[in-house]
Length: 479
Image (tube, rainbow, N blue to C red):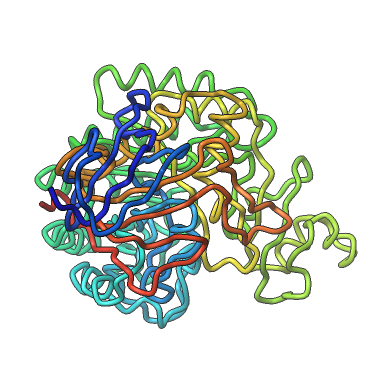
């Protein structure tokens, strides 16, 4: 047999949740051609993987890379940590279908400036990604806030019947064009005035296309159980699966409540298709939200349009320098970005370990001082939480980052190492893989990633993105 590439003597962690086994893995074209003892075979290139693990490429289910996969197609923060596919359009904000008359409202501004929103249809966005050919595969949700912004003159109210009808039509067209589903960001001011019924009406468009509903819930603070019930009710109304984004108990008064939160997830999962994602850190990151300003936690300011000189400092320090109360200082900085040290580590571990939890970075690629999750999430799960903390086995950790995610988002033939599957593959050292990015120095490639292959082609090796990129746009249920 003649193959294009053979990985020899690797520990295969196949993405199914099964424990690793030793084998050779052969690639022909963009697919996995054979797995087993391939000692006698011939190949254009042979990669010795002695002492290394071979896993499916990681799938980052929660990203805000919408415009960045086109503007910066090397996707270095992702490919360098073994990510081969990203899901964009989370938290109610998506680059398409979008038409902006002015500056993007908060938090759409996380994705870029007005000129970056130039995709009036989902199809035009998919074509732009294909033309850019990023280093990673891209699949996309449609954002509720983006739909609102297209149709409404004022986001701080409920949508009218006509506006909902227009949003439904745009969502329907996007689903026909291959979108994964709908996302919402009901915690943000630009969507908070949308009643449950508005989101339910949009969710009605999803079932016919086997779509999904994901949500940055109305709150992750005291009323979290009610917010979860609203999310589940919306999915039930639309007859679609629900994914709760970056599940956490935020705010010091909420610490420890993941016990109740996961109990509600488990009870609901008995009669409804529900899941969640989370990132492996006890700090969150977004735009500076006055509702989250408190002296109970550390709040680090990553950028400020009005006062760029205060970026890179704690809000408490800025307030002292301005000689203002904390809240007044925060108002002075807006619009701005912030990292909130708002979670308890025991809660993070409890959610990460939970059987229905996938891994998503929620990284903000346009932040000048990003949260380290942008560069470090997946190696951190493997190096810190699996190897050092022994929260779960290597097989379980990889499953949360590959097979579980591909199945949940209908990414056909991805997320597993098996014959016939796409050759999205990462080879890494299970003994040394670790995140390097820190809150102080967040822009740093992880250690322990040897080779990353996307659609059968080596895309990252020896710390370098290859000159030719091989990512594709992934449409829902695409063969």
